[in-house]
Image 1 (tube, rainbow, N blue to C red):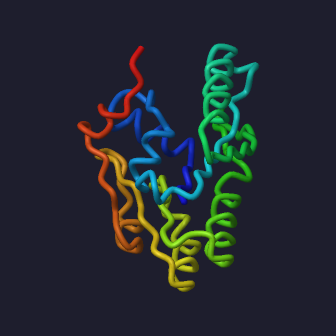
Image 2 (image 1 turned 30 degrees about the horizontal axis):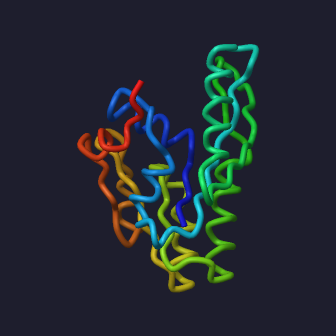
Image 3 (image 1 turned 180 degrees about the horizontal axis):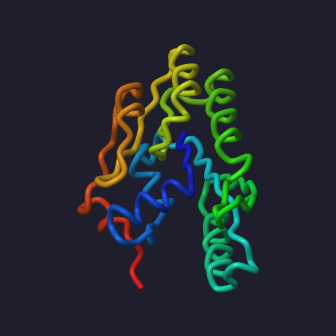
Length: 170
């Protein structure tokens, strides 16, 4: 199973490659191996429509494209405004962690691939490993997590060559 922290994934792609235009389905199938892929869980929070109608529409089109990917389940949390024009995702990380642990507990996968560089997932990853399941992390050139790399059973490095292979053409 592949668990994608959507916002983190987006920012890792933008920071590392200057673009987040990637074929998510093909990328996840490559990560897991087509015949081994059980399910993809994708977590994100919609941007505020009133902040940027164009960004909102673009993100909604992206979410619609995700819904067409075979074996992908999309979970949308919410954004909350914070002082200083900051925004915080709510419900997304906890949902990913709960799904990761629950699916391990029920034996729904042998290997979980977590697409994030957020070390807050370390306790959930360790709980999954205690159930005898392997957890792989996906690392990007400019957004790596020392803690995830240390705890996970394996880190899959995504370099420019791999990004280019799955990049969407305009």
